[in-house]
Length: 614
Image (cartoon, rainbow, N blue to C red; front, side, top):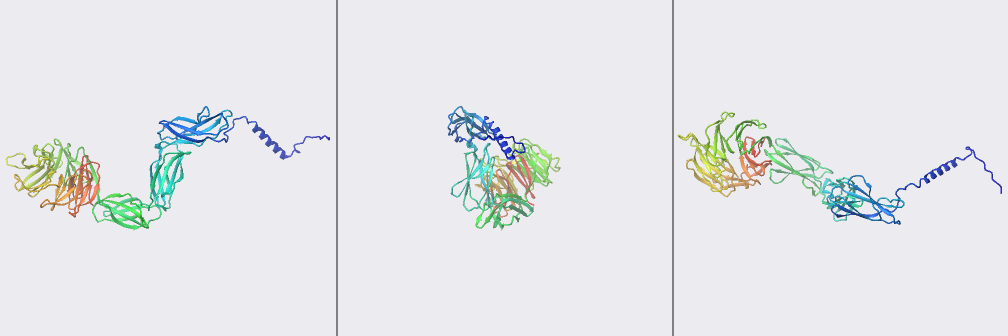
């Protein structure tokens, strides 16, 4: 055989492609030399059918399955607590057991999640982790699930995210009675709302909302909603003049055909006001009434469908709270003369305020008297006070800042609920409504008598109370609670004679007198008007609460209601008393007094001055 002789090639003679091949072989040999290092996870079948269940309070159980050719398999369990990172070496079994018990809070807003992987003890090879599972307690259910028609073709689904540690939220949806569309929407963790685009080609739409981790879900919350024409929103009211209210609103989406606006005056029923074009977003309401609490609401119409009404908004039209006087005790009774406000202030005596500027009342004088000062009256330049101990004090207030006491204590016996002062046959008398002790008639300037003295007591029936009296000429009217109203002739003040008696009309606690009618406040039976001629019932009005004081002018009746607050009732038509205004108050009202265009109302803690017309 011919022997082949090899010679050494020079670098210039060695092919370039051969150099590249040698370089690749060198890399492969280097990688092969590292084969003794631990390998990463292999694509073995992962554990499957991982399930979680509660075994008792504070304890859960994991179970799973695994297919393996090896007998030397253990399992590594990873746990995630709430929003923390995974602890991927939380626990490792000692053998091929496929059950794990863990102690966790089972009624917590923190979600505990788990996943499992297999590990060969001999080789150290590991599978990938299984899909995670989580334990969701009942309190993890999304709460306060609501659907709002966000626009004409959009629904906003919102809920409260109660938990920490979920992977996200899923929403199932169905229309009418069709099947559920599972996981119709999949949202990120901590989500609490979703806007769904709708076509309204159905009667109702239902949503189920639940949190998830891997293949496990929280308890679901479900809601059903019937889309309609969209409700106008952002309803706003502005008084732009003494006779006009501007009503404005907003509307999302395509304009409807019309907007339908309703108005309510006081506590009356809703009444249709106007319909405006669907492109219009405001309306100017021109009013002929002087003052009222006005409420408005609006809905939209598209084709033959109406939306629901918006939430109502209200405004006090030409009614303005000007100031508040804080009281240390109850404002039992009020009286206003000229620019001065007088308050019977319970254990704090009597207060005199200058109210020439009603936005800033200033205290002039505090007059003390024993016990609880219950009633107050001013006649000419004289101030009269009565308390709960049967005492009357009388002051000359010609100098309003320096009242001068005219007499020592005047004893009338009883509870001084109210004082009226009047002239009969040129002589002055005071009439004190003294509760269960009846009505006391006190005469002044008696011959040889240094003090005014009780000359007559008009007793009431057992269980009744004398709350107030009114003098008109020689006629005396007494509000006697459950005994109704009695009218007496006072031609002879020493011997009053009964003229009329009206019973079975409720508990008469206050009344006022006009030319034709006696207006009465009768507790839980509201208001009533009686003919002055024979005390027959003319009309009545239910205040819905407990009417305990009233005042009148030529237009309206002003009521302090223990439950319903300050009310204005129109009496322009005496046969049809109608509500004009209601202002809820934070404290039970006790008394009301009207002077010019101002209402003075007192309660257990304050006195307010309210402008009631322009």
